[in-house]
Structure formats: structure tokens, C-alpha cells
Image (cartoon, rainbow, N blue to C red; front, side, top):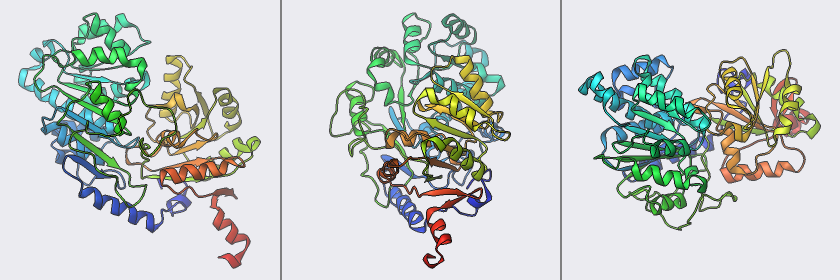
Length: 493
């Protein structure tokens, strides 16, 4: 386990069985046999062996990544960066589990190309050129702000104005003024604000070479339909070699077919995929060379009904360990605190299903060694940003949150997720679990079921192809049910 966790975990309390390791190895071998049109990489322990320079990244860009603490590419970055940098295919799909590094996978090739163009054209001519060269569209303000910050960090102080964010809820006049003053080449934003700026002539996208749709399946929702249609109609209209990149934790066949029907994609693209291999030995059937090649057409937006075999679940990071600790409802806060202390977790996110429970739980968890804060989707932007900053900086150890409030956010260093309330289904379990174990790091997910809820946890585990053993906290340490039974009855050991 991660070094920030308890020594007992580092010694293998949650060590994965050899059989599961063998399955992951078989998954990797199967992936190697996949057709070249579907570049599929098995996710092992995290980052790959070589540095970013081995992928053809500029030396100065790789050095900046090292300064930011990013030393080696993750599997999806190793697959995507050379492909997006060298290939001229019009459409790509990047599919990988939450926290696998998809943002840098598409952002680094864009930044590299812009820095190369800046050198070729000269800084003044490059800045004065009209129109943007890359547009990143996302469904939420929080995700847009996160990508914007990552882009600024990668570009460095000298080029940070090369990127601009345009999101709803922010002052539109200031956004327009910033765009006129800085003449950015990358714009990150939400559909409504981007479409509004495009209609008013303040966002010029006809010469935009790269269009990225992050969390693309969510952008299919009817609420975005009109804005997305406008953006897609204008983006790259007068650009030779315009291309589109679709990112998602799950690129289902239905979504791919809807993308094609709406004209979001055309033939000839590549599907870059990383599988965690957690579901077992057999590899899923490979998709065709065209990401729009799909069967079982389902028109309309993605359903909120429970996933079926035709709507694959998002994959979990292979670096996560899972367990459940049964607890009475009135004792859950105490059980949660004991788990946090037993695991010596440094950054924890505690999930509730309902916002009215958050403040009470945060108050119960607050101790001399545990500082807490509440995060809800109804908070105003400034307050929410302040809470996120304090948690990211380590001033707050435990974040008690609703699931909606954390969607699309990245919390570096989060090593423990606790489900005080059960997620509504296996897909929501994956989204919560994805807040930890990000970028190749390891993490733990602890669920606190009450009574008959235990069978629901086991159902999710079966659907996701993972092991979720039962544990309890004994004398300040996590102990499996099997270990507890062996201790109480030596004849069983």
C-alpha cells in the first residue's frame, strides 16, 4: 500500500491474491494481441518504465513535468501521446478508468504542438494570429477549472496566458476581456458559455485544429444538445486536418453510435484504451478500427438505469484495495473515525448520499488529529474553491462530501475513500472509488454497510469483478473477518 498508510497495510494486509495477479498478467498478454486499430494497454502498477522523453515529448516540457512531480507516463499516456503527436487520424477515443491520467494524455500533445508552432512562427506572430487552435469542452465548471489549472502548470509562467477558461457562472465580460488581451490558443469551457461566446463572435473556432470532448458521454445529455450542435458545426470549419478527441471512463457501444448519428465523429479514428484487468482473465471483444463501428443502436442520451451487459461499467484503478466494515447506523461516524486512524490515512473523502447528513458527520469526526470540512454541490463557487484548496493543501484531513460535489475533481494524495452510505449502484461505486488511487498511486476504499446492506456490497463486488472482503477494527488495527475467527478459534487456523 501507499507509504502514507499504516505499516500493516504496507506489509500486505490487503495484499492481492496470486490468482488475481495472474489474471491481470493474462489480461496484459491478451491486450498485446489486440488489433492495432484498437490500442489497448493493460494497466499494471501505474506508470510505465520510460520517461516522457521516450514518447517524443520536448525536453523542456518533460523537465517542467518533473518540476510538477510527474516523472513517468501512465499506460494511457504512453498509448495516447505518441499517437496524438504523430498520427493524422481525424478522430480518437481515449477510454480509461478514472484517475488514469487522461487529461495529460490529450493535453500534452496539444501543448507540444503549440510550443513548436510558437518557435516556428515567432512569439509575436504566433500570439497575434486570429482564432484558437484547441478547444476543450467539458460538462462541469469544476472539471473545466481543473483542466485549466493543469494546462497553465504545464505551459509554465511564460506561456500561462496561452490558455483561457470560459465557464458559466463566471463574469462573461471579464472572460471576453481576457480573451482579447491574451489571445489564447487553448480554451477550456462548458457548452453553454462556449456556445454563447461563439454566437457573439468572441470565440473564433473556424480555424481550431483540435476539439476535445472530455467526459464525452455526459455531453450527450439533452440539456447540452443545442450548444453542442453549434460548437461542432463551427469548430474546425476552415481548418485542414481538424480532429476530435473523445475522452471517457466508459465509451459504450451506444454512445459511440450516438456520436456517429449526431455527426460528432466520422470514420478512420483510433480507440486508445486502458483496461485495469480487474474483471478477470478474458479480454473484452475488441472494437473495430472505426470508433463509430458499433452495434445495438440506442438513440438518445445515456440512461440512468442500472448498467447492463450492453452498457459496460467504468473500470476501477488496479491500484485500489477494497473492504467493508459492518456498522450500525448510529455508530457509523465512530467506525469511520476508527478506520481512518487504523489506516493512518492522510487525505480522506467520506461520502454521504444526502446533503443534510454532511455537517453532522463532519462534526462527529472532528478530533484533535482529524480536521474536517464539508463539500456540497450547492455551495457558491468561492466557498467551494476554498474548501478544495484547504483539502488539497493538507489543511483539512477529511472531506465529507456528496457524490455530485466531487464529480470530475482531482484530489492528489487522497489515499482513502469511505462510503458512509452505499452508492446507488456499481457505477456510482466506481465514481466514488475513483477519487483515490489516481495517477498510479495506491488507495483504499472502505464501505460501511448496515445489516442487510452487506449483500448489496457483495453484489457490487461481483458486478465489478473485484474482491471486497469483510474487515473490522480491533485494537486500533484493521483485521479481516477470517483473521478474527482464526484468533478466536485457533482450530480454524
